[in-house]
Length: 326
Ligand SMILES: CCCCCCCCC/C=C/C(=O)SCCNC(=O)CCNC(=O)[C@H](O)C(C)(C)COP(=O)(O)OP(=O)(O)OC[C@H]1O[C@@H](n2cnc3c(N)ncnc32)[C@H](O)[C@@H]1OP(=O)(O)O
Ligand SMILES: NC(=O)C1=CN([C@@H]2O[C@H](COP(=O)(O)OP(=O)(O)OC[C@H]3O[C@@H](n4cnc5c(N)ncnc54)[C@H](OP(=O)(O)O)[C@@H]3O)[C@@H](O)[C@H]2O)C=CC1
Image (cartoon, rainbow, N blue to C red; front, side, top):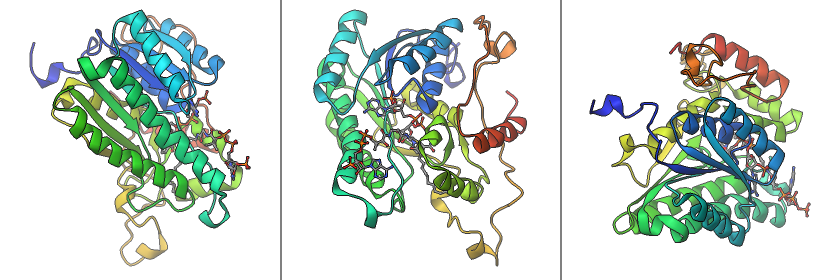
């Protein structure tokens, strides 16, 4: 078999070693599952080892390959040590997903300089440290593919000025690295910009902020929030040979929320939004354990797909009932 249709087979990443930062929870966990199911040896790294170990155990039970390493992405020495030791052990690092990150909600006027600096340090500096470490430790000589998870921030980021600035910085850094590291080093580097996603990350926000997210969750052309699987599948595409001529882009995965006003009242003359909810079926790609969707990997036990605050769990149940049946 040859051609595009064969690119996404089970063995897609079978010779690959791929590092996913923040791979123990939420979107990163979903990415790790997806990559392992396609044959990669996935290394997941973050600060809390228990979360990482739980995810690694799930992946192994499903027949995948996954190892854990502790890492604070804010420390450049830790980043370099981690890459060096995993390359020493496995002989390569062919992919890197910079997913670890986050922020808190606050109006800019109430944000302290330290708060702003912390979020820039975590997201922008942390992503740079990992890119640099991957370059120095392996990819500068042998090439590779990098995907940086940012956040949809086309029109700024009201309520999160720090992360908007940091993510815009990553998007621009990605363009530069594509040009500097593409020609001689064979590295592709791209961004994925999630809109509002039903993920465990939502547990970081107070109820009032969550209510705001929920109130606005349908005010986009998709009429719903996104799923972790919808981010993971975009990452898989960008890491894969199917994207081998794509370099330096930022791919918004946001149901076109970045193109819409997100204000139901402003659209009353021409009601673009459907308060009853979405007509666009979500993609949810978790393995159906023990069933056909398990792909014969022999999974056991019950995999908790989402770990989010209760109202979001309810939304997820609704999205599952309307998801694409693949
Ligand atoms: C539809 C609608 C559109 C919706 C548009 C789309 C919405 C996007 C939704 C996005 C969702 C996600 O990203 S979900 C992923 C969320 N996940 C995460 O955020 C996890 C990672 N987060 C973190 O680790 C923390 O939040 C972070 C602050 C970044 C780092 O924590 P640290 O422990 O390193 O830092 P700390 O020492 O606690 O804090 C450092 C300083 O930061 C400030 N600070 C920290 N937390 C603060 C807080 N809650 N409120 C104010 N200020 C705070 C203080 O000034 C602190 O200084 P002092 O007071 O002087 O000490
Ligand atoms: N959910 C959403 O709507 C959106 C999410 N995003 C982004 O997607 C990414 C994943 O988010 P999501 O899965 O939702 O949220 P989570 O909070 O579940 O994921 C964040 C992950 O980052 C890790 N992390 C945080 N700080 C550090 C650090 N200093 N060093 C190493 N690892 C760290 C955490 O692990 P640990 O605490 O163990 O270190 C955690 O696994 C984040 O960058 C997030 O900002 C962007 C837009 C929207």
